[in-house]
Length: 151
Image (cartoon, rainbow, N blue to C red):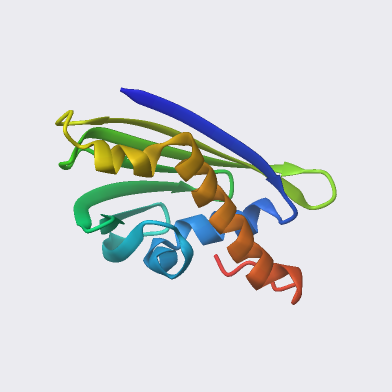
């Protein structure tokens, strides 16, 4: 089992970051490793999705259950192969001057020890790259326009 936590203060509102993370269908546009996402069912509090990650020439498809607690947290769960389990917990804490402390906590274990190529997608540096991708996306969408959250 592996457990990692990455936190970062970003110059955007918690609701804005929540909206970006909740919009899983757009991940292939800007999140490293995400090749495709298909949302299978959705409500305001929960959605089910099939996600495909790419690690070099290898593709990994798995299903997720995502639970939304606007605007403070998002929890993603999967027990599909290649995972024995995978938990992603995002939190969005308002900080002074319309900033937000974004934290991504990841717990996972693979069904097989031979999945070293996939374990690179869940290293601390990779998790940091994912958090950075959301900050960069927020910069592009909100920094110059002052746009309101589209949650």
